[in-house]
Image (cartoon, rainbow, N blue to C red; front, side, top):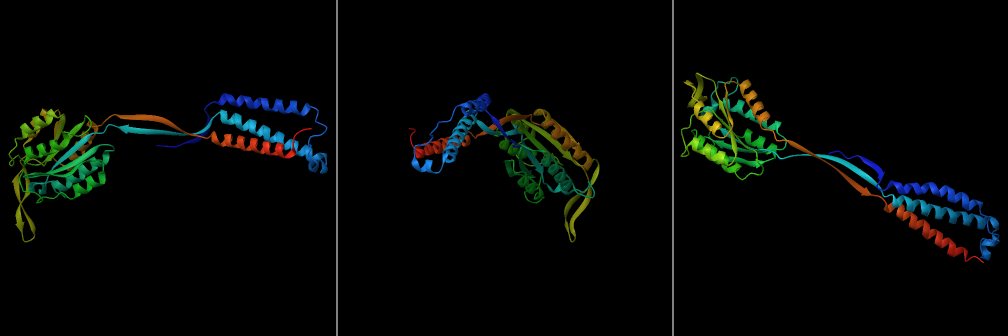
Length: 330
């Protein structure tokens, strides 16, 4: 929003009357002056110039009152021109897998969780007017942040995501149901779920495909992201004396299931096999989910006619006082 202060007149045609004032002044000067202007002896005692000076003062005040009244009729005002951009906004819930397999180190030098978190945080930074929520899931699902436009809170919640906060496992159906419950009553038409996981559904009592069909009934689109390479990857299998103990294991991501989930809701499924691919995927989703921005222009005015009107009243009051002081004409 930008404010540009400028003086203008709502009824500028009244200002044309100002052109008549010089003509009136000329006519007044051509009139023969009265032989005796004042009847008060005190004024006459100061000589003829005193009377003429007061007469000129009265004439000046009368002209000032007329000019101020004309300016007031023209309605001077200061305009503050502002442009406000508004957007309907999109409701986005990020369902983030924090199972222990997200610590797999196939995205060297970082693990899956660190890379996914960085890219999702970049995605959040690309949004401007959308409501974003965060769901963490593994063997169960829990809302970390409800839908909000407080992006620093969203970023902090993403930073705090760590495996071990919930029961281990991968309950994709439960994650979809929990996220859909957050989105179902959200305002606006656009409702999006980003389902980020690296595994196979092995926990929970809710079937993922059934949950996806239910989500589609609420107009929710699901974008699935499978995080992980193909083949073998170092996966944590327990803790040793020096921290987590890793073993090479086959990477298992149920691409078919995640594809069915996305298709059932009109979304898409992406497979991120490296950090660069994950970056491209979040940028694609960002481009796909953009609400049209509507711009509204309006003009606010501060009316200023009171100032010339006040000046007119002051000039008239001064004229009346001077006339009363000099006394009536003989």
